[in-house]
Length: 245
Image (cartoon, rainbow, N blue to C red; front, side):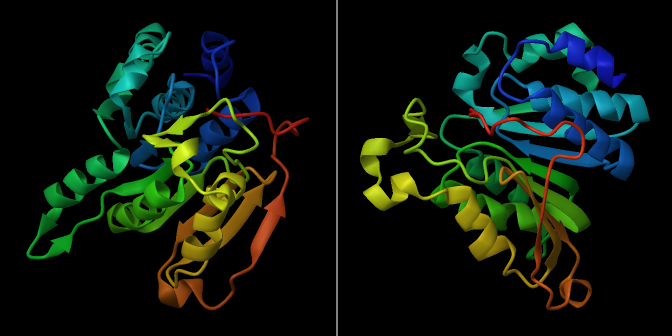
């Protein structure tokens, strides 16, 4: 499905902008991942951009995971897939509590003789924005990510304190957090303290202080260079960060 067609079909639906949609679309076109995983889809805009690029390339499938409440959104992902005809490229998974439980089940299903066989080439983490959930999610995803696979974190600089409209994140409320936890960007902490320090990862890149990339290379290929490149979005420069749900 051509980018302009999917962009028109998604016009006005939050929470992913057109420039970010283009980035996801182009990533799939350029890297041609066979199996993709998305943790957090909300209305499903990012899911549809990924699926559209897969359809254009004639290959690939997306597993996308969110809470049961995501099915109550208007529109929800099911409606967007029906609208665009991309349902065959996407499998929707929903959990009552957290996508970490989906990851637990997927690791179990992929495990034999005490070893988990990885199955994904790309994972887009765009959900809880919380150290407790996404810190664990990173290590679980690592077990499922193939060598050479890519990770992308959304909401790198997001904090609950700066965006009080988001009062709850996968069951974690503002009232349950300390003052420091409310003010600190949790995804930045996950990326800086866990991902960039992992010996198997490299090709670190932070775009617009909002997206953070890393590639699973293996310890020998990753080496000792822990440099994080900072770049602007490659298509349209964002005028402001805005708020992603």
